[in-house]
Amino acid sequence: MLATADERRHVKAPSVATGKAPLSVIVPVRNEAENLKRCLPALAWADEVFVVDSRSSDETQSVAEEHGATVVQFQFNGTYPKKKNWALEELPFRNEWVLIVDADEVVVPELAAEIAERIAKDEADGYLLNSKYFFLGRRVRHCGYSEAWNLRLFRHRLGRYEKMPVEPGAATGDNEAHEHVELEGRVLRLVHELDHFAYPSIDVWVEKHNRYATWEAQQYERFLRDPIPTTIGRGKRCKRLLKKVYLRMPMRPVVRFLYSYVFRLGFLDGMAGLVFCSLLGFYDFLCWAKVYERRNAPEGTS
Image (cartoon, rainbow, N blue to C red; front, side, top):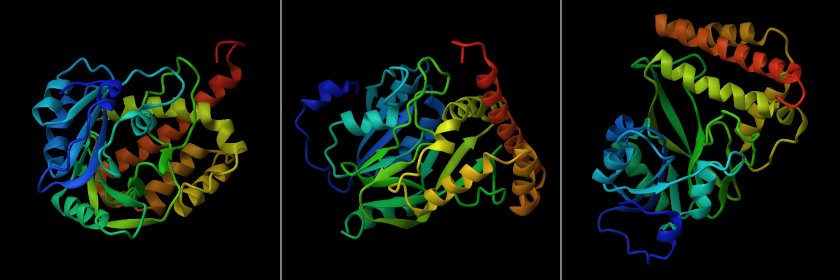
């Protein structure tokens, strides 16, 4: 099923399918055919699934259609909005609740059952989900990645990702990666976790983090200068406060490695932990280097 947001906006929404949770799912993608083969079957319990694509050149569309998802094409204008906020604004959801799932994530049956149960209760307006991270096929149990809580399940009319525009033409990607959901309402936590197969190879890790570092460099002054939003949750506010301090520290790549490998027990993850923590230190170096590059670029080229 292929439709634009404008086309679907004029289609009368059918009632919820029998036996499915009254939930709309957003899966933002670009060239994610292989990951979708694992992600979409695990979403069959949800009433509707939107695959929001960025003109993929692989079999993303056909795989999504095969699994009954509605494919909507997104064209990034280069600044704002990025894909998830665009989807929250433009898609004609037929349900009050929305779940954001990346293509490299899997909603396990226990989590699916818990989501269906919790949204049936009027106890909150959003829920934080934790993720199990997998790196090179192995679960990362330490390194500071044993907990990664994010607001992914919420009443869609109440939540939007932070508005953090990028410079036109910047190679930061067209999807929110580090922006957090700002929600006007009560937030609770879910018990069960997502499986997150984010880094199946070093190549994937480097490609993603090169884009993330470009985004971090563009947002560097904003992080230092701007007040912390009050609507991103207490935990995220605390992390933003620590980030304001951390960005002013010298030798950040060394600090990041020691923090992840020693203080957060990354050494207990064996050789995978050593590689992962070393990459985290390199990422902080790359972020610093890109800030330096921007500050020293000839005028008009940053």
